[in-house]
Every structure is written in C-alpha cells, then in structure tokens.
Amino acid sequence: MIRHLVKLIWNRKRASALVVVEIFASFLVLVAVATLALYVATNRNRPLGFRWDGVLSVLAVHPGQPRQLGEETTAAEEETAERLYREIAALPGVVAVGAAEVAPYQIGGSQNNFGLHGRKIESDVNDVTPGIRDALRLDLVAGRWFTAADRDLPYSPLVINQALAREAFGAGSPLGQVLLTPDPEDHQPEGRVVGVISDFRIRGELSGPGNYLFRLHRPGQPPARFLSCLFVRLRPGASAELERVVAERLRAVAPGWNFTVTPLSRERAGAFRRVLAPLAAAVLVAFFLLAMVGLGLLGVLWQNLLRRTKEIGLRRAAGATRASIHRQLVMEQLLLTTLGVLCGLVLVLQLPLFGVTGWLGPGVFAGGVVVALAAIYLLATLSALYPSLLAGRVEPALALRDE
Image (cartoon, rainbow, N blue to C red; front, side):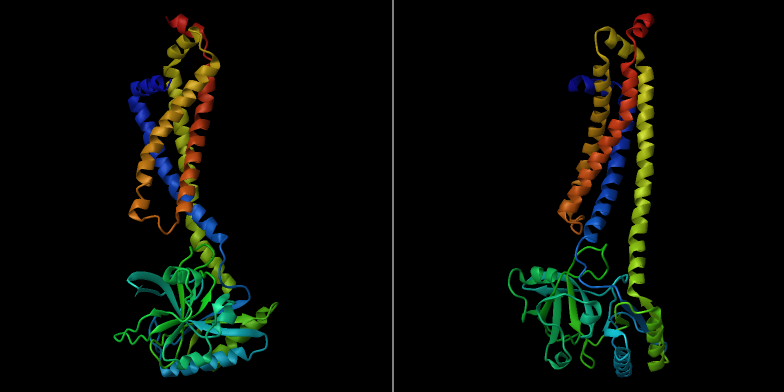
C-alpha cells in the first residue's frame, strides 16, 4: 500500500513538492510558537521568590548627577538616601523600606561572570540594603539575611538563590563558602555566602529561572553602587492616600531629586504586556498561516480529485469500496505531511546540538515539538476529510462512460 502511494505521489511530484514545502514551513512556525507558549506557561506556575502586592516602587534620580546602573555613589547621595529610608519607614502604615540597584520587572539588569574551581558561572547580581528582604518578602531557606553590622565585615556578605547554590556547590552547604574571589583592579573584596533564598526571578512570573546573587550595599566600601530603586511595603488595605503621602515625604526630604512612585503591581502588569503582546501576535500569525495552509491543502486535494475522476471511477468499477477510496486519499495526505515533517525535524533537532535551546529546558523543547506534530497532523487530516469523502462518492459509471 505504501509503495503504491509513493508511486502516486511521485507521478504528481510537482504538486506534491509544493505541499511538502508548505508543511515544512508550517511545522517550523508551529514548533517556535508552541515552544515559546509552553515556556511562558511553565514559568507562570513556578515560584516567584518575592511578593509584589502592597509594594510601592520608587525610582530616584539626582538631576544634577544622573546615575547609570552600576555607577558608584557619592557620600552626599548616601547621606540623602539614609534620610529617605528613615523618613519613609517612620510613616504610619509603612511596614518596611528597602533599596536595590535593580528593580523587579525591570528590563535589563546587572550580570556577573565569575570562575569557581575552574568552572565559569553566570549570575544576575543586585546590590541591596538589609530592608529589601521585608519589603519584598524574600523567602530565606538557609543561613541568615544581611544586617547593618555586616557593613563592617572584612569580606562582602552574599545571599544567593537555590539555583546558584546548586550550580556552584552541588549538594554541599554553600554557607560560609567563598563565591567571589578578590579583584584588586575593581576593588572587589572577597565574597562569602551567608544565606540562601528560594529560587528568585526578578524579571517576573513569565521569565525563566536562573542564578541570582544579592550583595550587601556597604556605603564607603567598594563596590558602593548607586541604588536608584526604593521599595516601600504598605500595610494591607492601605489607601491611595498613603501612596501620595509617601511621594510628598520623598520630595520633602530630597527636594533636588526626582522621584517616580509606581505600585509594583503596575510594573508587573507592564511586564506581562511586554511578554504576552508579542507572543499573542505570534500565535495570531501562526493561526492565519495554518488557516492558509489548510485552505491550500484543501484546494490541492480538490484539484487532484477533479483530475483523478477517471482513476477513482476505475477503482470503484474494479470493486474498491468508498471506504478504501476515502482511506487512500487521507493516507496520501498524511504521507506528504510526514515528508514535510521529517524535513522539519532534521532541522529542528539540530538546535539542541548547538546549544540554541538550552535556556528552554529539554522538557519544554520536547513538548513544543510534540504539540507542533499533533497540530500539523490534525490540520492535514481535517483538510483531507471532505475531498476524500467526495472521492468515495464517485460512481463507476463515470469511468465506464469515459472509456
């Protein structure tokens, strides 16, 4: 049967080649869209590592000396920042205040590549004040969090997430271990792990997991980064009036500074839109592409049916049943689909070998391929059903009359 179908396909190789190319291109688009959708859906169900509800995000900018991410702070700025922390923390209804170099749901960030025992490790890095744990409700699972006394330690205390702990130290305890070696050129002191938090994803629920490192901000000691992001946790049920009071107090303490006060929930919604809008556009494009491919396949099969009326009629006259005719045309379509899919799989399965899909994870990538396979075969089957049913209704008299 298969040999007979291959012969029929080869006799119409030009039309068959066009169908195979359509299937090939559609399969590649489906793999890309399905994989990205599964990646986002999988990330949505992972633990986030912090609480965004009830938090105000404050972006502070010194107009006279605007700072960039990673730039060192000045003594005057540190003094102003300390006053800001104290004044805001003293407001009724404020639960906790903390500052960080990088804010949740922010585009970009600070990354560091460092060597450990002959291995290269990559991690996001964020300089923070001790109050950031209570402000964002970070989940400490081992060791301790930063304290004000840590500023006087001869080394730089670090708190890392579980992902970084596993990659750097395996099954061993990371507490007390040296993670960052001293760097005299950058005035970087030795960094030791004092605590471990749960897996932390600062870019939000739709981002993938990764290594994360918190470093205590120590004014006057390198590296003293400028912390432009302030986080204020409000009491549950706080009104918008408290948000206005916080903004007014900030401007009163530092009248020369510019402050942008935004609920972290709004930043979260913006991050969702940045991720979901392009994904929704890609899904819409894939849908219309598949609709066009389905209509194209339907048209090709319809044209083949008109051209093959004699052939089908002779088969019916020779005793072929409607079911066998129907089955033959559907199997022809599935065989063409298989040829297109095999060409696509040859290309797609090269991606893991070159490390292109490492950030997705093997489960997500495999799931995307399976979803694409199911969708393309479903499309091919549906597009073949109606023409094949019409072919099964061709009467033997048509072929006998033509003969």
